Image (cartoon, rainbow, N blue to C red; front, side):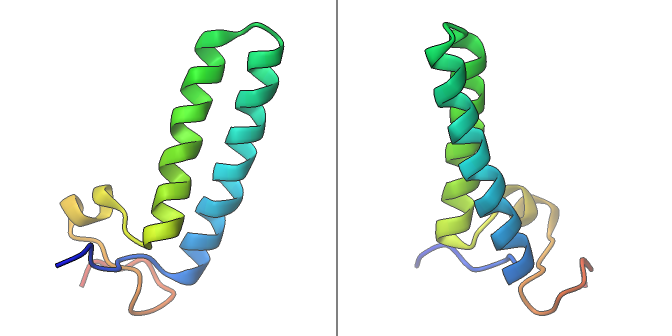
Length: 76
């Protein structure tokens, strides 16, 4: 009864790359003393990396989107 996979591999790779980039930006912002930017980018990056790891997107689930069956972004 885990989370159902609803993301394609392309979607997953994009989220992984963006998640890592946002975490790096978060560290840079924290070192620069920009705490709000650091917190915002850190939370967003963590969310994307969680999507990457679980292969599940809650937003897709709410909207009924499943890209795991093919490389197209169809809702059927």
